[in-house]
Image 1 (cartoon, rainbow, N blue to C red):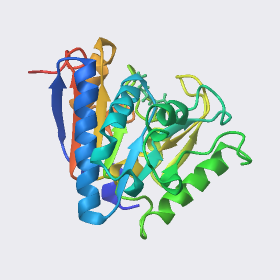
Image 2 (image 1 turned 135 degrees about the horizontal axis):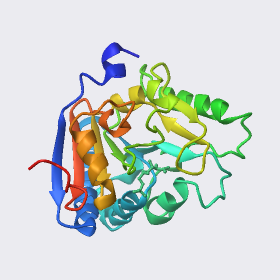
Image 3 (image 1 turned 180 degrees about the horizontal axis):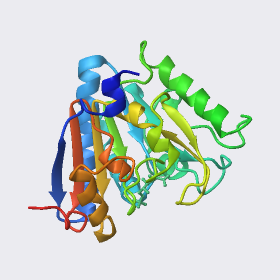
Image 4 (image 1 turned 135 degrees about the vertical axis):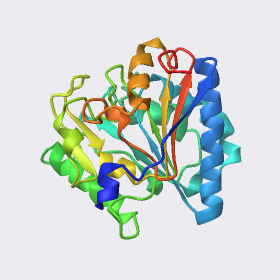
Length: 256
Ligand SMILES: O=C(O)[C@H](O)[C@@H](O)[C@H](O)[C@H](O)COP(=O)(O)O
């Protein structure tokens, strides 16, 4: 991975877009996602989307389903930014609501749907599963470690985490891999898989989506450019765009 990719220094400065409510945030983010993926397909014949778990992101995925006709979903690769290290049928899996709200409802190519491995998928441990996911990313990447994701949709925790990169956790210091196993996560369940900063920084566009007053302080610290080992959401920056898509409650701590 290059120095630029590891530091994020070359990434785009954050831009903030505020919507009046969570519903308007979900609807407008779905419109924006549809347009960005369609533009990627027009330009390159293929699009790479990264999704994660979380309440507002589930609303965004649900809002994408009725817009399916505006997009050639068969040309979209879907990757996960993080996943909980639990069995495939666990309610805790991030891919379950994502499939139920969107990917079971649109004509995505099953070969282009890339869930992170489940804990009962036959890997020795989460580390081996992380390596396998890194290999799948590299295989789709034309010589790089990861595809240049067209859109990465990230939620943010009240503590400032994104994906499964948590404040002060060892994962925030990993620069030599695209995927890590995470243990002792402060947010349950404790064992997870996550993309790393270098993998996220390789994206064309990173979009944080945040709703509610519980996120206001973390949003303000991240947008102000806190140390990413302390406020991980301050870290990832898209090469072309870093967008903060927030509702008024989540924007409450931002300077106007
Ligand atoms: O696996 C996870 O727990 C998520 O990927 C996590 O990073 C999530 O996106 C944020 O915690 C925001 O979640 P909420 O929107 O539900 O607060």
